[in-house]
View 1 (tube, rainbow, N blue to C red):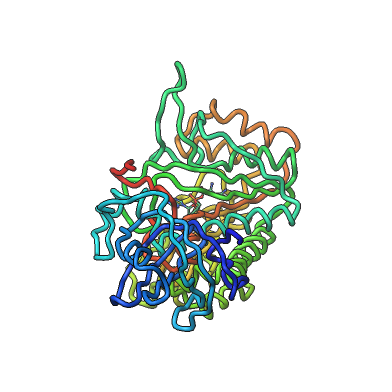
View 2: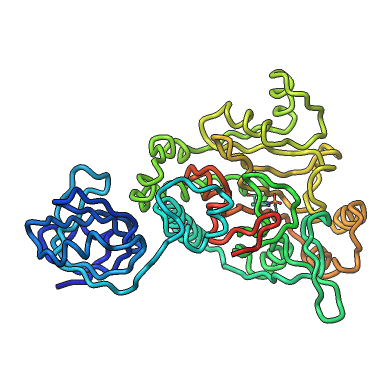
Length: 431
Ligand code: 4AD
């Protein structure tokens, strides 16, 4: 007899198998008992028919508490009534670990309660499905960049200077010096691109953001490719191919999870259609003004503006060439316009907002120095970064995709806190 995982049940119809699982839920009619089992790979139903098993086994099955760990033995059969399509006809149950008074019951719990029990909440079918999608996005990310000849390069988490801005830096001590938690791996990625050509960093990043929204985490993971000899347009082409690859991979490999989440697969398929529209910041302002948004050239867009702009199209869109004053110091100035930088944000459909921020980098030493000074950053800490413009500077571009924003969007879930196993949020560091 084989030990199998629930997700592979289809391959064992008619066979007797053994599965290590937890009891997620149970119900009984008196003559027949149903256990909802989960084993980490999927959830499915175990059926215990009173007339077919010993009284002892039936009593055991109906007395199992939620989250009791068991070994279950039985035959796999088809189950046309469930979306999953298979179940197990139980012949034996062996209790491995008892569970009493499991705090998360099938009734509705408030968000705070669930967040306090995140270590247990992760076991629910919805949270499980989101984690499967997160895993697939990570896998497909490495697949994409490795196939395209990028080298994965790890950037430091403890850093001596700001990577984006100084407003949301996490300060810490580094022996006798000041240090920060990295907001981005980008500046190190740029050094990597000059050494290795095409690199990507994939690591945790930290922002002491005081905002409590459904899109913001304090600790989130970012994928940041950086490419030497690559200008803006080519970078946009890579970004859209990458995102389409992520969506396609989830469609190909996460059928079960998408079903659990009731995600509209036809809708997701649309997001694999390239190219994604490019809308300049100037055009975006015009569209918004023509639709009664109170926006002036120079402002940054908030969630209502981004959502409205994305709703005008069927796929994610790029908003390009923002005003210099509202973007980071390292972005390359537009050759024909002093007040604009060569950059783009990718906005996801369905109100999920920005998932990528990217730009061509300023490769001119003097202009970069000026940018650092204008942003009020001390030039001393950026000497190493300026070296990249002193010794064989080349046009180069890169971007950062927020992993959790992307998971939230593709999984079609409400809030970013569900897209990471243990979210760090404003005023929350437990569990
Ligand atoms: O636009 P951002 O700030 O860009 C950078 O950090 C660049 N250094 C990237 C680069 O060019 N290499 O952030 C990039 C992405 C955003 O589009 C968003 O998806 C995500 O990171 N992000 C967050 N995700 C969750 N919580 C937050 N507080 C986030 N801030 C940014």
